[in-house]
Length: 492
Picture 1: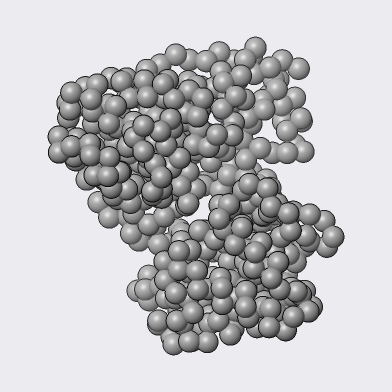
Picture 2: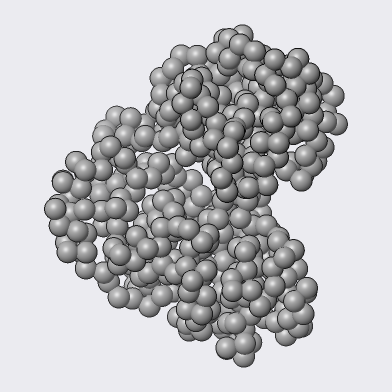
């Protein structure tokens, strides 16, 4: 079979967008949209990718000259839709850990205007060890600060060369948070008042992304490539639906003509409702159910929807706890959105692996589920049973043995599975479980109290919520004693 580089030709365009993140989501969401914008408008711009971590997909992307294929599949209004699109909007991928000088040279590009990113919920974070002299800085915001300072110096503080940032990480006020950390580095690194003034010329937008992207289609890849007529190691599958909400201070619609290209993009000065709806219902339904579903024995979101017990648990969590934790005046709209989300989860063409969703579940729980849990308590004075159980399921899922970097090995029915998160998170869980035995009646309580008291994870002390530690530890103890199925049966 031909390679994709033998079947398709890359298209040379000015690099107008810098993208931190080379994974499946951004390639099936942002870069797919830019490809459409290139074909339907006069934008004429490519994306240069920056690999956020030392190990990544950069070599494969460059071997394919930035070319890959998106496969969108789903059911809309009873009709099956399947469409493939070769993507030519990516020019190259740089690894700043081995190509730091080339990375900084991108800052000198006069055509560059936009910066997008998806470094996971844990990516927009401050690292006290970062220095301007590092090659590169460890944190994403540290890399951004060094990049911006190089651009500031190269263009002598020209405000016309300021950049527009559109982060896609699923944290509240992602653009504002990124700018605040960049400013902190600028102060600590003594970059000077002129740089601060120029930094204010940059627009750090807050944004919300919505598309389910399972990624590489695994066992289907060979047959799909046979239909395409070429081998594509970067083939990425996604659902048909997409939504990008961008909250901005300036007006960038003409510069980045996403709407003109017919894409489902909303430019707004207040995206709070859209974000709350999506993060707490779609993402919250994922994070509050998939860890329990995996321990129960399932592997994909579609299996969750088809399993009578798990789908009952998921629906109870959404309709009885998540939606009631939000503003009552939006109840009808939230209910409709939730029904649409469940229909998207049932997409038979999307093999969304639960283990893929489980990546960085601690930070995801904080962003996606914890606001519903605490919001329900604040509104009702009661504990939400499904969300309490989901926190216990998270703790149970993180029980692992051997630790290697960002991966801990758990066990389900005698088979190992990867637990992937920040190394510090994994070390803490490994240490907690090493200190207790399954038959220790007080073990679940010790682990629960340590986890709920980890204010650096949650941003608050969860031990302060009356009854929550006992309820979570009771669930965890039941899981450890008799498995998760009985607990779910009693829950629904």
